[in-house]
Length: 412
Image (cartoon, rainbow, N blue to C red; front, side):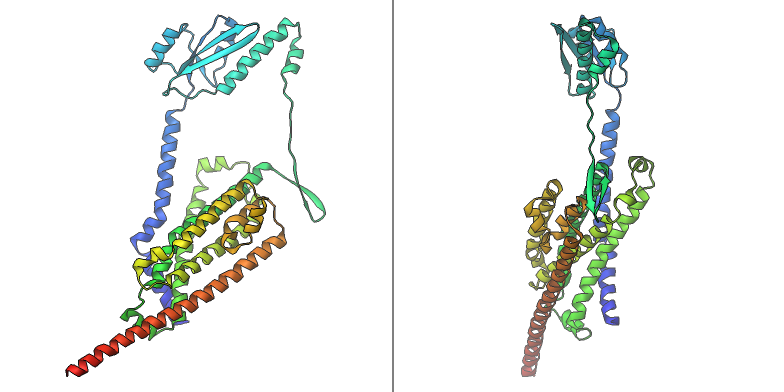
């Protein structure tokens, strides 16, 4: 066991202390920070209320629109289209609204430029509709209370219920959205870590084969210890990266705007049960594809061939990722139900079924059991292949050594 941890420590330190690991960990964070900064500055530069001109002969429309200052501001000094276009060219005006009335019906045409601040045209349309309905109601001799009743829209509420243990419980749509978003994050995380670590694991398994280094190593430790030592070390490196992200996430939750964004949501209550199950799928998914990468890395003897050998993992993970996206929109589809029990795709699909409550506790247990059995079977096959390949290359190396020794003896 001591030799096993020596192999684990050597491989772990070699990778964690490298610049490649640091760039792999912090590159996504830097990219997200740059994207966030761009979005912040762009939104900040476009913030503010747009200033428009209202061109119409109906003074009632002008006065009502001028009273609205939250969504836009009306410039009362501009009364013609020519003046408005000149002001827009000088970047002193964001656009102008032409309102015409015919037979009690209002028609508006809003003109703006690509550099204009965004105007909520739906809100503007609702204002014109309110003015139109108020004028029509006045012509019909309706009282103010009748007008208010006429303009009051109907309301519709939604209640989502679940049947558990003979009882009925209700859940909020916001809670469902957060849980589905959590499942989406799990799918993306599994895909990212697979794409990142598949080649690393393959290179570690394929390295040292057919060299004198392997002969020296096998004289001290068994091939089984060497295989599991490297595999466990890479998995620990992966979990180290996850731990770094977890710490940064906890720090991010202390930032003001993140607290404001999540205010009103009991995240721990919403994600209770879901986090534990998704974490199991997340860990098993990474371990499964790590073992697959080790299996494919055992097929080659040169590090240069690893990228070609792990290509099937890329296609499998892409298929699983897109299956997860499909599950995000339709978690009850028959293809999704079947695919969630296929070990190669379970970690991508099942979190969405758990988040949407479309799978029973028995189904979750069965999928986890199948996934664990498949991981153990793949690990066993990978170990057999690795031991066989190491034995072949070691025997070949010993044969070459004997040939060299015989030639040297003949020369003497």
